[in-house]
Image (cartoon, rainbow, N blue to C red; front, side):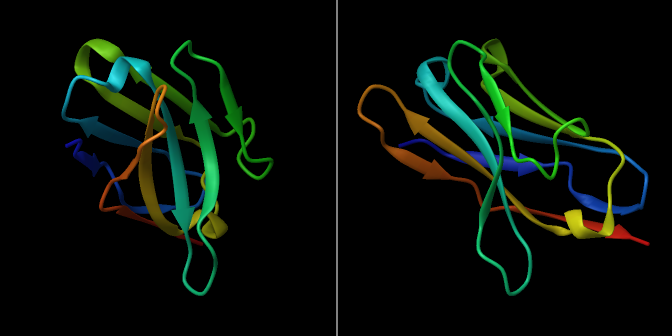
Length: 117
């Protein structure tokens, strides 16, 4: 069983930065696709950023140039560096792991990010 624990959320002013971390238990992290999603009140959960097991990345258009996803396989941890934050980035941010090759999906419990104007 894989467990994901996010941390690093909080309250920040517009224009500020936060770095989210997601630590995974288990031994499959190095062969998994990792992603960050977010869900704002009254909205559907949306993909923010994704990183493959060979470090290819992709981002939602709304965060390109501001957010950066990275991973440290030795620490079983994925990060989301968020810069130039905007009030519309306010949401609960979730970490997602998709194992390879079977595609099992695991979610973290979420961490709140609030950006004040």
